[in-house]
Amino acid sequence: MIPVIAKYMLSRSFSKINFTFKPMDWQELDFNGSKFGLYLHVPFCKMFCSFCPFYKVLYDEKLKKKHVEGVKSEVKLRGLKGNASWLYIGGGTPNLLEAEEICEILAYLREFMELKDVGMEGNPFEFTPEYLEKIGDAGITKISMGVETFQSGALRAVKRAKANESLVGKIVDVAQKLGISVNIDLMVGLPKQSLEGCLKDVETIASIGPDQVTIYPYLLIPGVIASPGADSQSVFKTIESAWNILKENGYKRDSVWVFAKSHRIYDSAKDELVSDYFGLGPAAFSTCGNIQTVNPPIELYLHILRNSKRLAFYTELDEKAKTWRTFAHELYKLQLDPTVCNKLPLNIKIILQLLRTTGYVKGFNVTDKGRYLVHEITKTVVETLPFPLSNPNRIKNISEYEEILKKVKLQDA
Ligand SMILES: C[S@@+](CC[C@H](N)C(=O)[O-])C[C@H]1O[C@@H](n2cnc3c(N)ncnc32)[C@H](O)[C@@H]1O
Ligand code: SF4
Image (tube, rainbow, N blue to C red; front, side, top):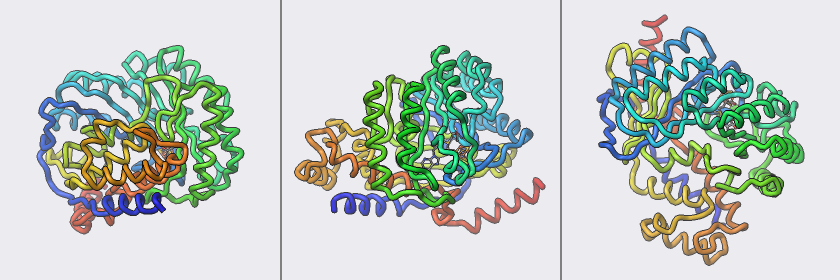
């Protein structure tokens, strides 16, 4: 009953977030020297996996070059300066950019600000030893790559190429020798995927020994095509069994789906949920206090950079949605921060107390029983995140937006 009520309240508070597509000042989000992070979206993929809802376009050499130039113009136009506490380069598939292009973007960013803690995502096929060496020299300290599963039938069902064990092992080995820590993403609940097989996947990955393993349940975010291969409770039980295997192999549980040996955690979702950040590149989110903006898709993104007028999706988060998100984030970590909890509004404090009396939380720790609740709540948070590009229902003035997009496509054709 409690998981159902909590899920209902969360999805209600998130379902109200809608965006307006409108012109904005380039420097509208001003962090005033306060702490901020950076996210750079690289939207290219050579194939589209049918489980993936994230904004992506088919890889094209010329478009990729324009993207690199576009990002540099955006950095300048948005007046970024100061100290970025983190930078995640996500996608899409960021390692479809040449290592030299990653170095070029990082060097350009450093002309305007200091960068700490730089991580990048990628697929296992492009992380060659030479690539790793170059990005390591440019200051990348952590990488994250999708393996998802070694089960061939499931990979065929989601239209994804298989990265075999020896390739993955070699990347981990080379990266670690260069001082780059590695996260590997696995997924549970894909079509044609056996849950027993998922535990074998975890054993294989544990024997390779990356610094971190993230095990995602297949999340039904708007935009996904693949049908789920298992129900949420069975997926959760599989992740719990995976935890036993990882524990025996020296991993600690950092949050409900993240297991790590090192302290250099690759968890962009965690950082993005709680701190203000600038998003660069097409479809990137930015958050500053209550204001959230989302960049337009690549054709419009490149167009506005050439025309020096910023068009973006804009919304203001209400206090309720923000406090629910903070509470969900505290639960996600499995260990709640007393200082944060003390600042929560009374209605959420009452829910926390209820979770204690029903045995889901003990003091400030989520109990074994509580982990299923946290799994369900985190799923709800992610599945109801307001992505305007994959979920046009979230755009208030959709016809205006579509009209502008059509004009730009015609002009550039
Ligand atoms: C956006 S991809 C970027 C990495 C790179 N393109 C790759 O595929 O290896 C990052 C990760 O998101 C996860 N992911 C994508 N769609 C998901 C979904 N619907 N549910 C859960 N995880 C998902 C996958 O584990 C994937 O490795
Ligand atoms: S999972 Fe990675 S490779 Fe597959 S479509 Fe998404 S971003 Fe592209």
